[in-house]
Every structure is written in structure tokens, then in C-alpha cells.
Length: 399
Image 1 (tube, rainbow, N blue to C red):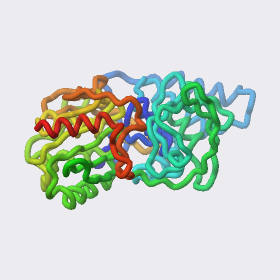
Image 2 (spheres, one colour):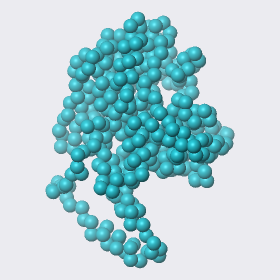
Image 3 (cartoon, rainbow, N blue to C red):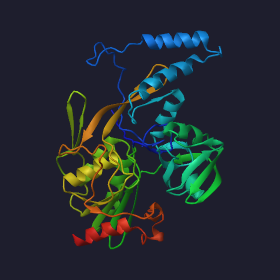
Image 4 (cartoon, helix red, strand yellow):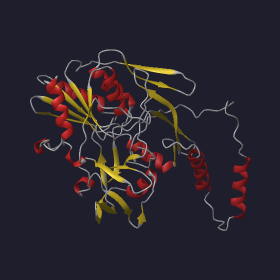
């Protein structure tokens, strides 16, 4: 089974999600069947009030032209919302279909990363080569309106519904940037989210950026290491702004750098432990390594960074990470909708959890502006403003 991860409150605008990717990927698995609960230690849920409420609405609501599917979806959505878990969500059939498409790294939209709060959603970055990047949207921009819809306090899946759309259609955003407010109209397009990009910088330092942990991450990283590792004096693995992805890919990434031992473990509500161990070819177990992280490094990226730190294989440079240590599971329903439910938590090889705490870097290095991050797609622009990358290079030079 494949598992994916997501950020609480941050979204990668790919599909209608309620977490750390409208497009943020959550740790997830796909069961063969929806379980039948013969007995529950927490007691039986009384559905009589729910049934009564449905009868009242159907019998007496002023508009007799009710949509039974909307009532059904709203009922399940309410159940999930009552959990008070920001990572659990309900997706109607259309939303779940888009979610599945997004898991492949392809979607139709504008290509932005967002964080959500009680105020307005804030852009934390753009997908390289996306319409949003071409339009000049920047980290720190707040989306005030989409069309004529005010975005204050909006959820990730609501934002996705408004901003996503078919290839070739347009969406107008009202943006606040500092004291300036302006509108921008962007043509939606098919987006392919990059996974791994690499180049050689400084004095033979291999720089590898993982944008997200997709189904191609392992093969792309393996290719980058096979091609460029020879002759490299050190390596920087950049996980900044990485919202996570398939945690199976996180397993494989760790295994490239660590020759043996545990990568991470999963624990369910009964205390059952599922330990994951190093596997694979281990191409880079001896090269000096520094990992860049920041507040938007979450879940699968935290698994990788944290495991490498615990194994004393790499030093972390940057700022405290997001702190998402739970695992979600998709339960597709008969009507094509989906319950996306938190079912497990993950732990580092030393038994520690980073949930709600994040990883502490070995070297704290703030960055004044996300726009100053080194762009591996345009290495000719250099990294003079990227204070975090320069700190990482200093750590490597110091041995």
C-alpha cells in the first residue's frame, strides 16, 4: 500500500484538500474494503437524531427541490468535521477524482503553495514554470479575493474549488503584497509538479532539491546521485517548502544515505508498531551531507530530515520544521466519495515524535525572504542572497 503525507494548514493548490497541499499530500493508505465495525470500545453512535433531522429537512424545508446527494455528502462531511482533526477530511466524488489525479503530480490550475489561517491564505511559493510563477506571484502574497469571493478564513478545499479549473480557463485573484493591493488574471494550465532537480555549485558541492515526494522521487534521486555524485566533495539536500508526499519514497531517500537500521516507524491507536528499515543500494552513505529545512518542510520531508539527523548522517540547517507526525488513510465509499481519516502516527528511529513540535535544526539560519532561495532551475542566478544555503556550505566546509 502507498502512503502520502500532508501539511496542516498549508496547501499545495492541486486539488480540493483540507490540509498542508490544496495539493498537499497526506500520509495515506488505501484499504481493500471499508471496515465493518461489529463492536467499538468507544461506544455506539446514536444516529436517531441524525435520521430525525433528515426527515424534518426533507418534509418541511421551504425549498422542496432538495438534492439528496448534497444532503448525503453534507452529513458525512459533518461527521468528519466533528472530529476536530485538521488532517481528516471528506471528499465528494469530484474532489476525490481530482485528488487521485494530483497524486500523479499532474493537475490543472495555476501552481501555488498556500498556508491557511483565520485570515487570508498566504502564498508560500509557486511551482516552477507554472502560470502563477509567470504571473509574478510571490511568497508572502495574500489572496484577498478569487473573482468576487472574499477569501478570509477560507478552508483549503474551498480555495481549491475556487482557484482550480479546466486547462485554458481564467481566474482572477485580488492580491495583497505589503501595502499594495492589485488584481491579476491568470490562465489555468496543466501543471506537472517537479520532484527532484540537481546541479553542482560552489567547490564541487552537489545540490539536490526535492520539491515533493512523488511516485518518481526515488528514481529521480537515484539518477541524480548516479550522474553527479562522483567527484563531489559534499552534498546539500534541500527540503525547504517541501510539503511531503509518499512516505514510501521517504523510506527510499533515507536509504540512499544510510546503510542500515530503521528509517521510521508507525503506531496505531492500539499501540501496534510497524517498523520501516533501510533498503536499496545506498549510493551516498559517506559523502558529507547537510539538509536544508524550514517551517514549510513537513511530514515526509520531516521523516527524511529527522531520520538523517537521528542517524547522525546529516546536520540540519535552517529553521524549525512544520511538525506533522500523523498518518491518514483513504476509505473510498460506494458513491465515489472518500473519507480521508487520521489512523496512525509516525515516529523517528529514536522513538521521538515531531508532531506539533517540528524538527530543531543543528544550525539555525533564518532567511529574510523566500524569494532569496536558490533556484536550481536557474543556477546562473546564483545563491548570493540565500543565507541558509550559504550557512549549509559553511557547515560542509567546516567538516
